[in-house]
View (spheres, helix red, strand yellow):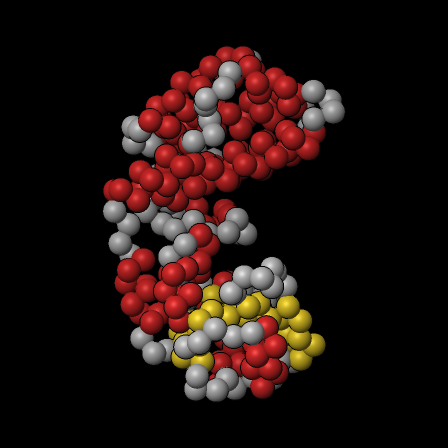
Length: 267
């Protein structure tokens, strides 16, 4: 039995221990994609008809067999997050009401998680959500690409030089990380896929048809580069390569010009 199969069996035990008013239980993360390893945990989305308090979510987790329970994240939001262990295996559960699930399933990282989710208990919601998530129209591609390219322009490209200063290491790293995230947002949008987390990034982008050459390697090289100018140069080159793949739009067109000018300044 593979590690993913072992963890899925444990996740099913958690789902089976929940009462009927938990109407949808979705296994997500590396276990649902079949790529779990020895350090993987179990991630699950649990949907109830009505919103739960944190105490109610903790109690349901207890009844499902989770030990050493705790919570993380902002408790003022309607999302409940409960962590615990089952036979020493970490289990993270996200709790949404049905209304909240309908609102959030296609947003942010939730879309990718649910698109690859496995139903452990279902009332039909997961199948409907996954069908809707397969629709990735041109308008959504353009919207996400334009949003990603938004920051690359609107001020003098010479501004890149300000984060070359010796005392701007954190600001420079923030710019590099943000740039990498925006490149990935463009690449996944162009491939009509909902953007995943950056864990195991090489495997996630390996099969993508549209992407800059050596995408992951270039991100890692830019972040690891100790020379500030070379680091910014490497990331700016990658950003420009990404927008060259993108369809024309106000932000994309501006970014192409701005990034090209930035390259000349950095060289």
